[in-house]
Image 1 (cartoon, rainbow, N blue to C red):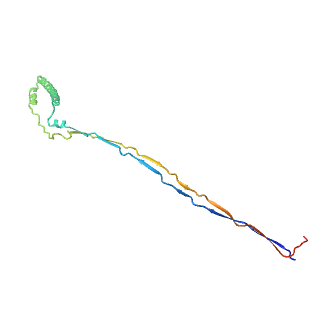
Image 2: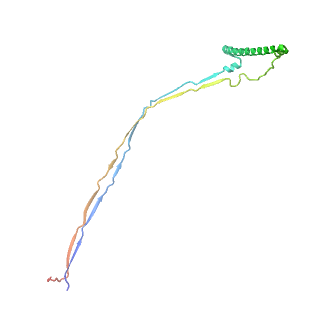
Image 3: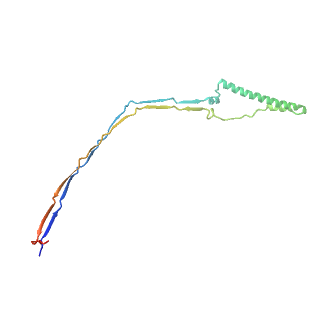
Length: 192
């Protein structure tokens, strides 16, 4: 005997989600810059003259072009030297004359020394001698002074424009839930 059977068939609900995600936008404007500068600076240049010193005193002295003071100083020095030489010569001759009593030939020796001519000496040189002219130089000085005003630079930053649209999600029921009952077979056991 075939018993009746119950069949239960259920269907689950299916939900659906529809979402909208628009794009975010960012716009950044460049910063504003302002530069101000006055073009009226001062430039000062000053210089001193260069100096050249030429001393030809020794070159002129070689050519016997001397001043009176220098000439008198040289004459005084040479005269003093000649006096000392004459005194020394006279003392030597006096020592020789003292030897006359010993039978020496002192007078003839002194006459011979005084009668001899000194050998002539020759000297070849240029007038003036090299490196007698003294040259000295003081260079010039150049001073540069510039007064230039500093520029005035200002920046103004611009904030970025950020647009973030709202994301939306819509939840909906795509399929409803359902239960179906069915009976198969035609006999039912009532004794149970």
